[in-house]
Amino acid sequence: MNKSEENERRFTAELEFVQCLGNPTYLNYLAKSRYFKQKEFINYLAYLLYWKEPEYAKYVIYPHCLYILDLLQNEEFRESLDNPEVTDYIHKQQYYYWRYYKWNRQLNTLNDKQNDVDSLIQSQENEKEKK
Picture 1 (cartoon, one colour):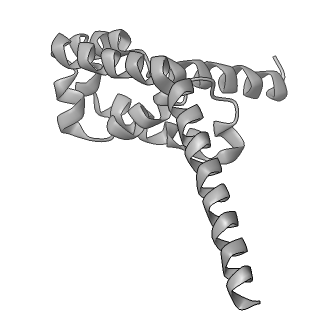
Picture 2: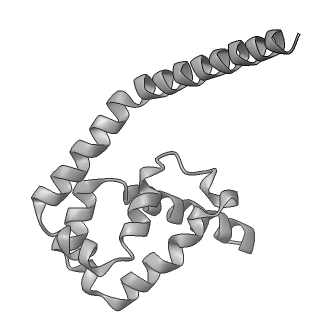
Picture 3: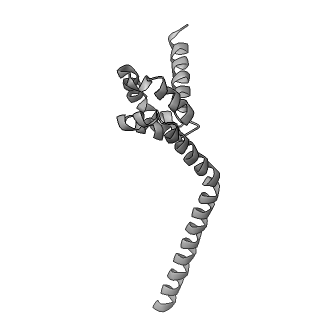
């Protein structure tokens, strides 16, 4: 295998692993398997922070994984993942985010448009007052 193929393989493997961090059940598995107690693994998680850079983040399909990667830098958070109630809570929060994402985006868009209309009306009224 040449260097280019090796780099591509590493890129793909690291991307897949980072995205797996968005799975709360997998996080619980890592905690139960005591990966979060291994210094080498913690160092690897710190190394993976480069995925937050725009030139790499654009390949990430599940952006929650980048937020979780940030949280995994915190020892207290890592320890909490041993508790299935914590990972269940994370899972529920992801579900609600995904469920209401489109609705919330549409609501924000409507609010932005209303603000634009209000600003336009106000500027027209100001123009009339000047005349």
